[in-house]
Length: 267
Image (cartoon, rainbow, N blue to C red; front, top):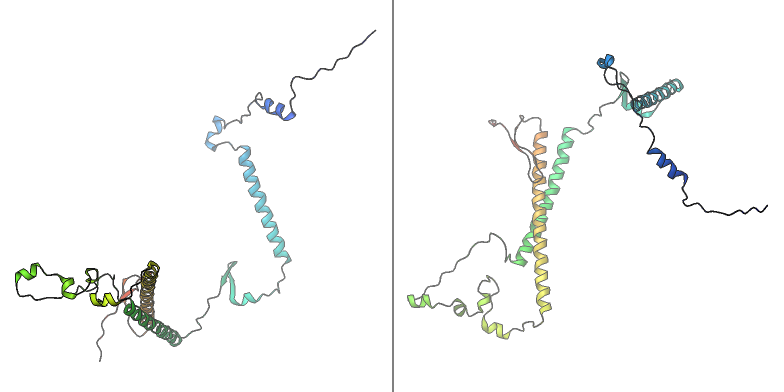
């Protein structure tokens, strides 16, 4: 008897996870029953997820209460902390004791006075630096500069029509708008003007930096003025001898509050 055995490879190889996914497509859908009609007045029927949420919350609360009870039993009645000096317990709730003001009204006034003196000193320093910058820059492009006028008198109307201001001032037409350092043509011929544009660009850059610094210092002086005014108002409000003022405008970042005091006749 001759027996022949042949090996045949499987056509497809499936993994176990593939069969599990395929099995899910044919399994029955699990449905939870709803509340019977006779018990509709009791509301919706509690599902398993609702029970799990309620059970988890109950177990968490039970564990917290057991820890607190254990901590209360293990507590030493003679236990002391330095924080107990500045706190007290009312109806089982901890409260901080109010801290007394360690500064007297006279000391507060003195502190405000020193702050005002310092701000006044800083404002004067900024004013001096601003005046120095204005003198160096001449504020050529300043907004709101005064419109100066100069009147020239001639003998006839014909001269008015043919009047040439650059020829009259003996200067270049591009320099007419300058109010300072307006050289004449003969002076321009004697000058050694820079032919390199780098020198002109460097000068323009220096002027731009000067105007930027001037704008920054003007803004800083304005902030110092607002802070000084706020301190003055606070100092006046701290004075208990005066009557209570009426608030007209609220305090803002760029403005101090406005109060109106009742007029009192001086004896």
